[in-house]
Length: 87
Image (cartoon, rainbow, N blue to C red):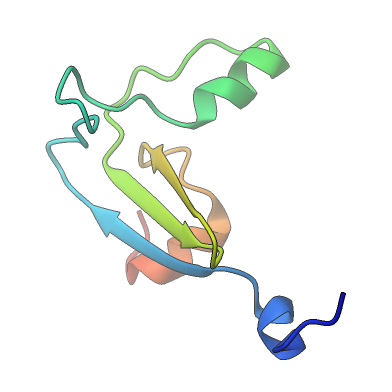
């Protein structure tokens, strides 16, 4: 398979980072979103994150979007630079 724009593949997904101090509501309006780090915390044997998920990270991979929610403490370093502030 030949990529039409191989230079775009090297750049990775287009990423947008948003903040809502009140937390992010789930799409079905049933509750606030949990911190995405809970999956990794469970694997590592750490307790679940109970902080509000105030960051939403949307990654556009072309054919699909990946949406994750993060508290201030667990926001990945690669997304902190996009927030414009030291969270």
